[in-house]
Length: 68
Image (tube, rainbow, N blue to C red; front, side, top):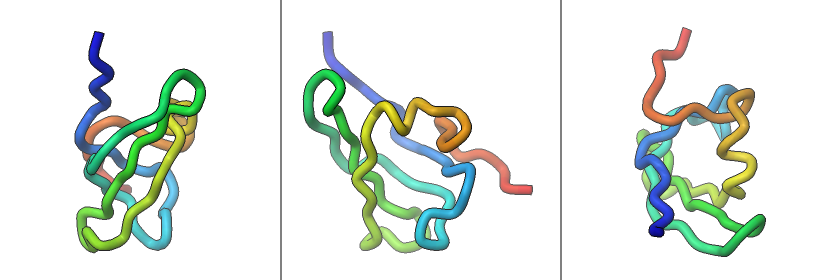
């Protein structure tokens, strides 16, 4: 079965000043799975995030969410 994380993510808190990210690539296996995300407003800014962190709803939400 292929592992296919969502393509758009919103951080609950700013990451280097950005909140909206797009999936660039993914890798790893098991507990070491990771994704590489690029900030929508600055695609050259990239973050590598463990899948376990990305699944934490207090840190990340799938899709682009409205920011209050």
